Amino acid sequence: MGGGQVLGGALLLAIVAVAASALVGEHGIAHLLRLRAERCALGDATFALLAKNQGLRSEIDRLRGDDLYVEGLARRQLGLVRPNEFVYRFRRDYR
Image (cartoon, rainbow, N blue to C red; front, side, top):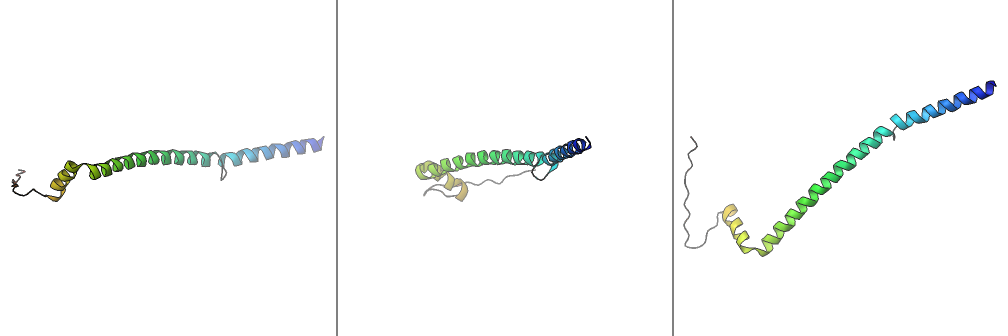
């Protein structure tokens, strides 16, 4: 019966080794948890980029088709005025 105990001990040792490898090994539970967290972060980044992309598409549509919007941008960002318009600038006093 000594051989059966050795075989049982070897089998138990093998089971413990496999379990330890699954828990702390290179591709164990910790690695799986890191991959899940990375997948979640990538999903969040994807949704954020999709929303930003939709906003940019809307902006492009307005630039292509809304003349008043383009005029407003030109006035605000470039300081453009129409002929015969006057621009009044006031000094701000922040005291």
